[in-house]
Length: 258
Image (cartoon, rainbow, N blue to C red; front, side, top):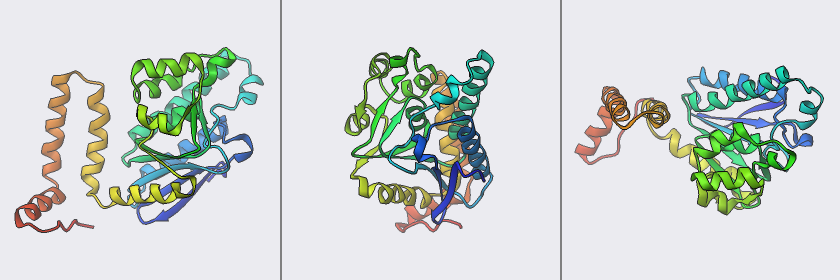
């Protein structure tokens, strides 16, 4: 595995992918994007993994694209390939069968903020700050706007995109970009507690539910309900659902199959 991304297993069923370029504020260079995408593909095929955490070493979560790399390749083809590579990786997060949690400290800017927005859940330290600041350097953060606009109200997203201003962690929580804000020393534990809650749930329901959630968002109302109904019918055929319902009727805790 490329040492741009470290792979850890902090607890049963949990895989943590750690961005490992702290000296560059974990910039999403071509190398980093490839390493993260490769790690995500490996996780997707791992039946022992139930939850994925994307974390980062050092003071920052991610400062976004590597501007030095971009400046050294002023060619349209390079930029097209770089943004396509980034978009594939971001899309893979939501197509992954496992839920993905961002563990955020320090800054998450531009494509780093996009990475937070594309994760299913996010826990941030109290010192975390978020921005899509490309506009300050003459570049509208178009690809980050895709994830941002699917987390926040449109006017809130546009304000960030047009001003480049930072928002703090409590504001990010209020606007829907993160789920929890905790003291810096408690971030890892808060993430593991969230992981434990998900790991305790039946895997088929989590897997089907995540896939359905994102598919129905892109559909009209009738098609969304049709797909949701089909998903629930398939889910009901799983042994875990049958056990859950029987446990409810028996007034006992369910005993999920391993």
